[in-house]
Length: 420
Image (cartoon, rainbow, N blue to C red; front, side, top):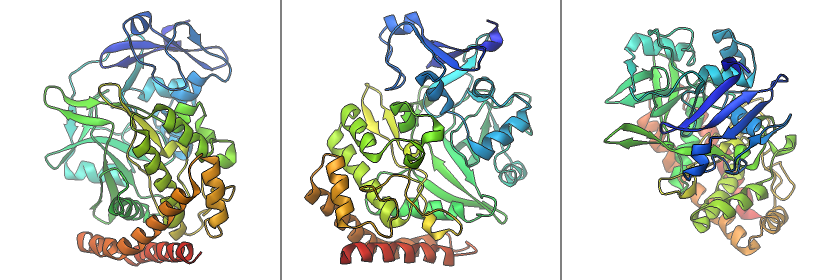
């Protein structure tokens, strides 16, 4: 096996283990002896800490690391830009230096550095980045190209944002924020996501800190990374995390329940098992699914949920992200990613479906009904003021009637639930 078929996995400068690919292209993984002997932690609920190889044609190791990569059109564009084979291993080799969480994946001949080098983007460079929807790997101002990997089908770009300036990392330097861009044929997605996320915050759900920004006529979101914290001694510190597909051992192609992915009850059971504060986290996860039904978010799938591993080994449900009222968008399937009591159409979910979900999730039906009614009442109370705040803050947004469309969707669904 050559170096081209091996990668090293690092955490805070410590070697966690090794990746390799077999002739069929499947990725195998082995924890390093020093990592196991010195009390390292398992990097995933699906990859227990033990010596020996984790490899097979459909191994949990392959699924875990493949889940770190972009999907769909974002992946295809990246492959074209980098001119590399479209395989998980080749992509990890090229862009695994700055992933979600705290792991750094580098070629076997290289070790991580602590230089944390960045290049400040001027207004013209930032405008160019936004226009290209984050495509920076083939057109950066530096010779040292960044190695950035974020999962998902939408184009994203991790940056360092501080003192009002945007900076691109060199090589594997950590980033503090994620930029997401207008989507072809759906240019209002940044505004929809900003408003929906801020609405969730208004009713008490823990969400990422998100802002709507613009350059010229192009809009984008800037979200603060929950898996990065400021460390006065070392700048940015990475926190380990994994999404629920990784934790439950599912591949990214099965993130939707309809496609053979996990059910909501499986996610809840996992959280009960691993959370350091299951009472709070389970309650928030239930409210998240209720919010998705009432606020029209059909894209709340297993990769939009994550576990965050805090210093001191505590494990918590990560803040919610990628919240968007898809029911306000044309030509988007409005069926839910997670079924409620076997029903995915939010327009006909009724009391019996919530009761079935309570039974599936081993929670009291009266408690769940109370959460549904409480969330609906809170949304009806906050939706108007939330829209007013959005208009006051982003009054220059060219299509505020789009936000009114979200308000109508939310009001209609909440009123229907309360009547039933």
